[in-house]
Length: 165
Picture (cartoon, rainbow, N blue to C red):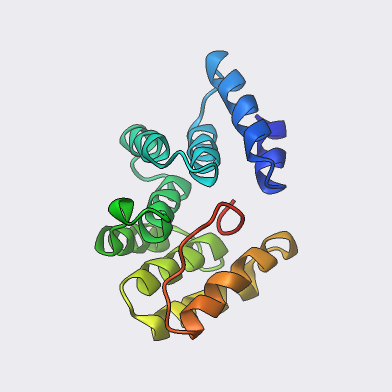
């Protein structure tokens, strides 16, 4: 599972998915594995399956911050319009934000994405800038594109190469 997380972090989504699949077949599953599995699927463009997996994860672990954030991110940033739902994204992102610590950059980025999808760009910029301040160096580059979108008055739609990993 750790190797899968490394592959996910380095954007080798195919290999990450293989490692997560292997771990899941061996019954080495926690909510973090399920969330990471869904993120890899999302990044590879398997949106319906990613949404199915993240909903399953949330049913099993309803208060898992990572699962709430991932689901909200998917709803706010999915490239396929039929999967996007800004209102639901914002509701989930707010729950995650309330549960998280104040320095959780992923929750900040997720709130930004939800606000951006709803056209509330001032709020989106505020949360995106805070996420950028808090994020580890390895994630900061991925947060620049969404921030630029919000500053330009546009929502951010994930293309599989950035965002929350």
